[in-house]
Image (cartoon, rainbow, N blue to C red):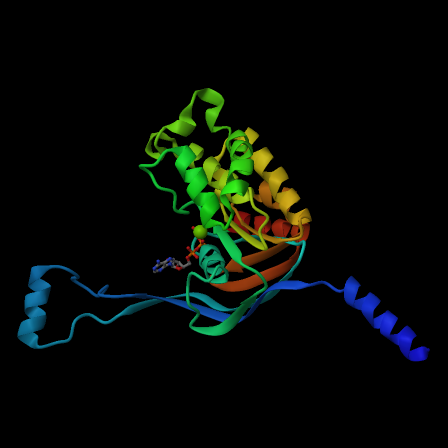
Length: 269
Ligand SMILES: Nc1ncnc2c1ncn2[C@@H]1O[C@H](COP(=O)(O)OP(=O)(O)OP(=O)(O)O)[C@@H](O)[C@H]1O
Ligand SMILES: [Mg+2]
Protein backbone atom coordinates (compact mmCIF):
# COMPACT_ATOMS: atom_id res chain seq x y z
CA UNK A 1 0.00 0.00 0.00
CA UNK A 2 2.76 2.39 1.02
CA UNK A 3 4.59 1.37 -2.10
CA UNK A 4 1.60 2.24 -4.27
CA UNK A 5 1.38 5.64 -2.68
CA UNK A 6 5.04 6.19 -3.23
CA UNK A 7 4.63 5.26 -6.90
CA UNK A 8 1.75 7.71 -7.24
CA UNK A 9 3.84 10.44 -5.64
CA UNK A 10 6.73 9.82 -8.03
CA UNK A 11 4.39 9.80 -11.05
CA UNK A 12 2.84 13.11 -9.94
CA UNK A 13 6.22 14.76 -9.49
CA UNK A 14 7.30 13.47 -12.91
CA UNK A 15 4.27 15.12 -14.49
CA UNK A 16 5.08 18.41 -12.79
CA UNK A 17 8.69 18.24 -13.90
CA UNK A 18 9.83 20.30 -16.83
CA UNK A 19 10.66 18.33 -19.96
CA UNK A 20 14.00 19.34 -21.52
CA UNK A 21 13.93 19.74 -25.31
CA UNK A 22 17.36 21.24 -26.01
CA UNK A 23 20.50 20.62 -23.98
CA UNK A 24 23.66 22.49 -24.92
CA UNK A 25 26.65 21.27 -22.96
CA UNK A 26 29.91 23.24 -22.99
CA UNK A 27 29.81 23.85 -26.73
CA UNK A 28 32.64 25.45 -28.70
CA UNK A 29 32.19 26.35 -32.37
CA UNK A 30 35.09 27.32 -34.59
CA UNK A 31 34.75 28.52 -38.17
CA UNK A 32 37.65 27.55 -40.39
CA UNK A 33 38.44 29.92 -43.21
CA UNK A 34 40.58 28.36 -45.89
CA UNK A 35 43.10 30.39 -47.81
CA UNK A 36 42.36 33.55 -45.90
CA UNK A 37 46.04 34.40 -45.43
CA UNK A 38 47.67 37.56 -46.72
CA UNK A 39 47.61 38.16 -50.45
CA UNK A 40 44.94 35.62 -51.11
CA UNK A 41 44.23 35.11 -54.76
CA UNK A 42 46.82 37.56 -56.06
CA UNK A 43 49.25 36.27 -58.68
CA UNK A 44 52.28 37.97 -57.15
CA UNK A 45 51.75 36.38 -53.77
CA UNK A 46 51.29 32.97 -55.40
CA UNK A 47 54.51 33.47 -57.34
CA UNK A 48 56.43 34.56 -54.26
CA UNK A 49 55.15 31.48 -52.43
CA UNK A 50 56.40 29.29 -55.26
CA UNK A 51 59.76 30.97 -55.37
CA UNK A 52 60.22 30.78 -51.62
CA UNK A 53 58.74 27.25 -51.56
CA UNK A 54 56.35 28.09 -48.78
CA UNK A 55 53.08 26.31 -48.19
CA UNK A 56 49.80 28.01 -49.09
CA UNK A 57 48.44 30.38 -46.44
CA UNK A 58 47.43 28.82 -43.18
CA UNK A 59 43.84 28.24 -42.28
CA UNK A 60 42.41 31.06 -40.17
CA UNK A 61 39.97 30.29 -37.45
CA UNK A 62 37.18 32.23 -35.81
CA UNK A 63 36.30 30.92 -32.38
CA UNK A 64 32.66 32.08 -32.51
CA UNK A 65 31.17 30.23 -29.54
CA UNK A 66 33.30 29.58 -26.46
CA UNK A 67 31.90 27.03 -24.08
CA UNK A 68 28.20 27.76 -23.69
CA UNK A 69 25.77 25.58 -21.74
CA UNK A 70 22.02 25.85 -21.26
CA UNK A 71 18.90 23.70 -21.16
CA UNK A 72 15.58 24.71 -22.71
CA UNK A 73 12.27 23.14 -21.78
CA UNK A 74 8.99 22.31 -23.45
CA UNK A 75 6.68 25.31 -23.65
CA UNK A 76 9.47 27.82 -23.22
CA UNK A 77 10.21 30.76 -25.51
CA UNK A 78 13.83 31.72 -25.10
CA UNK A 79 15.20 35.02 -26.38
CA UNK A 80 18.82 35.27 -27.58
CA UNK A 81 20.31 38.75 -27.43
CA UNK A 82 23.78 40.28 -27.71
CA UNK A 83 25.73 42.69 -29.87
CA UNK A 84 26.66 42.00 -33.52
CA UNK A 85 28.97 39.04 -33.90
CA UNK A 86 28.34 37.75 -30.39
CA UNK A 87 27.44 34.27 -31.67
CA UNK A 88 23.64 34.20 -31.71
CA UNK A 89 23.13 32.97 -35.28
CA UNK A 90 25.99 30.52 -34.87
CA UNK A 91 24.35 29.07 -31.76
CA UNK A 92 21.00 28.66 -33.53
CA UNK A 93 22.61 27.01 -36.56
CA UNK A 94 24.39 24.56 -34.26
CA UNK A 95 21.18 23.70 -32.40
CA UNK A 96 19.55 23.13 -35.80
CA UNK A 97 22.33 20.66 -36.58
CA UNK A 98 23.72 22.74 -39.45
CA UNK A 99 27.13 23.43 -37.91
CA UNK A 100 29.46 20.94 -36.25
CA UNK A 101 30.75 21.69 -32.79
CA UNK A 102 34.47 21.80 -32.07
CA UNK A 103 33.82 20.27 -28.67
CA UNK A 104 30.87 19.81 -26.33
CA UNK A 105 27.49 18.31 -27.17
CA UNK A 106 24.02 19.35 -28.21
CA UNK A 107 21.01 17.14 -27.55
CA UNK A 108 17.58 17.90 -28.96
CA UNK A 109 14.29 16.15 -28.47
CA UNK A 110 12.49 16.15 -31.80
CA UNK A 111 13.39 17.87 -35.02
CA UNK A 112 14.58 21.47 -34.70
CA UNK A 113 13.66 23.81 -37.58
CA UNK A 114 15.64 26.95 -38.28
CA UNK A 115 13.64 29.83 -39.64
CA UNK A 116 16.27 32.26 -40.78
CA UNK A 117 16.25 35.28 -42.99
CA UNK A 118 18.24 33.12 -45.41
CA UNK A 119 15.98 30.08 -45.39
CA UNK A 120 15.90 28.62 -48.85
CA UNK A 121 13.01 29.53 -51.07
CA UNK A 122 13.36 29.33 -54.82
CA UNK A 123 13.50 32.76 -56.40
CA UNK A 124 12.35 31.67 -59.83
CA UNK A 125 9.33 29.79 -58.60
CA UNK A 126 6.05 31.45 -57.75
CA UNK A 127 5.02 32.08 -54.18
CA UNK A 128 2.41 29.37 -54.60
CA UNK A 129 4.99 26.74 -55.65
CA UNK A 130 7.22 27.77 -52.79
CA UNK A 131 4.42 27.31 -50.28
CA UNK A 132 3.75 23.80 -51.58
CA UNK A 133 7.44 22.84 -51.72
CA UNK A 134 8.13 24.36 -48.30
CA UNK A 135 5.27 22.42 -46.74
CA UNK A 136 6.33 19.16 -48.37
CA UNK A 137 9.88 19.77 -47.18
CA UNK A 138 8.57 20.12 -43.64
CA UNK A 139 7.07 16.66 -43.97
CA UNK A 140 3.43 17.46 -44.69
CA UNK A 141 1.35 15.24 -46.97
CA UNK A 142 -0.33 16.63 -50.12
CA UNK A 143 -3.67 16.52 -48.34
CA UNK A 144 -2.25 18.57 -45.46
CA UNK A 145 -0.70 21.06 -47.87
CA UNK A 146 -4.05 21.53 -49.60
CA UNK A 147 -5.70 22.03 -46.26
CA UNK A 148 -3.15 24.57 -45.03
CA UNK A 149 -2.46 26.42 -48.27
CA UNK A 150 -5.04 29.21 -48.05
CA UNK A 151 -4.28 29.83 -44.39
CA UNK A 152 -0.58 30.33 -45.17
CA UNK A 153 -1.29 32.77 -48.01
CA UNK A 154 -3.77 34.71 -45.87
CA UNK A 155 -1.38 34.85 -42.92
CA UNK A 156 1.46 36.14 -45.10
CA UNK A 157 -0.73 38.92 -46.47
CA UNK A 158 1.12 38.58 -49.79
CA UNK A 159 -2.10 38.89 -51.75
CA UNK A 160 -3.33 42.01 -49.98
CA UNK A 161 -2.07 44.17 -52.83
CA UNK A 162 -2.88 42.04 -55.88
CA UNK A 163 -2.21 38.51 -56.94
CA UNK A 164 1.46 38.29 -55.94
CA UNK A 165 1.30 34.65 -54.90
CA UNK A 166 1.21 33.56 -58.56
CA UNK A 167 4.29 35.67 -59.40
CA UNK A 168 7.90 34.47 -59.03
CA UNK A 169 9.50 35.17 -55.65
CA UNK A 170 12.10 37.43 -57.26
CA UNK A 171 9.38 40.03 -57.75
CA UNK A 172 8.86 40.24 -53.98
CA UNK A 173 10.40 42.82 -51.70
CA UNK A 174 12.68 41.39 -49.02
CA UNK A 175 9.98 42.01 -46.42
CA UNK A 176 7.39 40.14 -48.50
CA UNK A 177 9.73 37.18 -48.97
CA UNK A 178 10.44 37.07 -45.23
CA UNK A 179 6.73 37.16 -44.47
CA UNK A 180 6.04 34.23 -46.78
CA UNK A 181 8.94 32.29 -45.28
CA UNK A 182 7.67 32.85 -41.77
CA UNK A 183 4.11 31.94 -42.77
CA UNK A 184 5.21 28.64 -44.28
CA UNK A 185 7.30 27.68 -41.27
CA UNK A 186 4.62 28.77 -38.82
CA UNK A 187 1.99 26.55 -40.47
CA UNK A 188 3.48 23.52 -38.81
CA UNK A 189 3.76 22.72 -35.15
CA UNK A 190 7.46 22.46 -34.49
CA UNK A 191 9.14 20.53 -31.74
CA UNK A 192 11.85 23.17 -31.61
CA UNK A 193 11.43 26.33 -33.66
CA UNK A 194 14.50 28.55 -34.13
CA UNK A 195 13.79 32.05 -35.41
CA UNK A 196 16.61 34.35 -36.48
CA UNK A 197 15.36 37.91 -36.78
CA UNK A 198 12.62 36.84 -39.16
CA UNK A 199 10.27 39.27 -37.51
CA UNK A 200 12.31 42.39 -38.00
CA UNK A 201 11.72 42.52 -41.75
CA UNK A 202 7.94 42.58 -41.68
CA UNK A 203 5.93 45.75 -41.17
CA UNK A 204 4.36 46.40 -37.78
CA UNK A 205 1.03 44.73 -38.60
CA UNK A 206 2.83 41.58 -39.68
CA UNK A 207 5.16 41.71 -36.71
CA UNK A 208 2.21 41.71 -34.37
CA UNK A 209 0.62 38.78 -36.22
CA UNK A 210 3.82 36.76 -36.09
CA UNK A 211 4.33 37.46 -32.41
CA UNK A 212 0.83 36.14 -31.76
CA UNK A 213 1.68 33.05 -33.78
CA UNK A 214 4.88 32.48 -31.77
CA UNK A 215 2.82 32.56 -28.60
CA UNK A 216 0.45 29.99 -30.13
CA UNK A 217 3.35 27.76 -31.20
CA UNK A 218 4.57 27.91 -27.64
CA UNK A 219 1.23 26.75 -26.33
CA UNK A 220 1.27 23.90 -28.83
CA UNK A 221 4.07 22.65 -26.60
CA UNK A 222 7.18 23.17 -28.69
CA UNK A 223 10.16 25.27 -27.69
CA UNK A 224 10.85 28.54 -29.46
CA UNK A 225 14.19 30.35 -29.72
CA UNK A 226 14.07 33.93 -30.93
CA UNK A 227 17.13 35.93 -31.98
CA UNK A 228 16.38 39.62 -32.27
CA UNK A 229 17.83 43.10 -31.87
CA UNK A 230 14.32 44.34 -31.17
CA UNK A 231 14.08 44.26 -27.40
CA UNK A 232 10.37 44.85 -27.55
CA UNK A 233 9.80 41.64 -29.54
CA UNK A 234 11.95 39.79 -27.01
CA UNK A 235 9.99 41.26 -24.10
CA UNK A 236 6.63 40.50 -25.73
CA UNK A 237 7.37 36.91 -26.70
CA UNK A 238 9.99 35.42 -24.39
CA UNK A 239 9.86 34.77 -20.69
CA UNK A 240 13.48 33.71 -20.56
CA UNK A 241 16.44 35.37 -22.23
CA UNK A 242 20.04 34.37 -22.80
CA UNK A 243 22.54 37.19 -23.37
CA UNK A 244 25.60 36.26 -25.45
CA UNK A 245 28.69 38.42 -25.72
CA UNK A 246 31.89 37.41 -27.57
CA UNK A 247 30.71 33.82 -27.73
CA UNK A 248 30.05 33.35 -24.02
CA UNK A 249 26.85 33.56 -22.01
CA UNK A 250 26.88 36.73 -20.00
CA UNK A 251 23.50 36.23 -18.38
CA UNK A 252 20.57 33.81 -18.51
CA UNK A 253 17.31 34.42 -16.70
CA UNK A 254 13.92 36.17 -16.68
CA UNK A 255 13.58 38.39 -19.78
CA UNK A 256 12.77 41.57 -17.89
CA UNK A 257 15.95 41.40 -15.80
CA UNK A 258 18.30 40.35 -18.57
CA UNK A 259 17.04 42.81 -21.19
CA UNK A 260 17.26 45.68 -18.68
CA UNK A 261 20.86 44.69 -17.91
CA UNK A 262 21.64 44.44 -21.63
CA UNK A 263 20.15 47.86 -22.34
CA UNK A 264 22.25 49.39 -19.59
CA UNK A 265 25.36 47.72 -21.02
CA UNK A 266 24.60 48.92 -24.57
CA UNK A 267 24.12 52.51 -23.37
CA UNK A 268 27.43 52.46 -21.52
CA UNK A 269 29.32 51.41 -24.64
N1 LIG B 1 30.47 31.63 -42.11
C1 LIG B 1 31.33 32.19 -41.26
N2 LIG B 1 32.66 32.03 -41.45
C2 LIG B 1 33.55 32.57 -40.61
N3 LIG B 1 33.22 33.28 -39.51
C3 LIG B 1 31.92 33.47 -39.27
C4 LIG B 1 30.91 32.94 -40.12
N4 LIG B 1 29.69 33.28 -39.62
C5 LIG B 1 29.95 34.00 -38.52
N5 LIG B 1 31.26 34.11 -38.29
C6 LIG B 1 31.92 34.78 -37.15
O1 LIG B 1 31.43 34.21 -35.95
C7 LIG B 1 31.19 35.20 -34.97
C8 LIG B 1 29.73 35.11 -34.51
O2 LIG B 1 28.89 35.43 -35.60
P1 LIG B 1 27.30 35.29 -35.55
O3 LIG B 1 26.80 35.43 -36.95
O4 LIG B 1 26.93 34.07 -34.80
O5 LIG B 1 26.91 36.57 -34.68
P2 LIG B 1 25.46 37.16 -34.33
O6 LIG B 1 25.40 37.26 -32.85
O7 LIG B 1 24.40 36.40 -35.00
O8 LIG B 1 25.57 38.65 -34.92
P3 LIG B 1 24.43 39.61 -35.56
O9 LIG B 1 23.74 40.26 -34.43
O10 LIG B 1 25.25 40.59 -36.33
O11 LIG B 1 23.54 38.79 -36.43
C9 LIG B 1 31.58 36.52 -35.61
O12 LIG B 1 32.85 36.85 -35.17
C10 LIG B 1 31.58 36.25 -37.09
O13 LIG B 1 32.56 37.02 -37.72
MG1 LIG C 1 23.00 36.89 -36.54
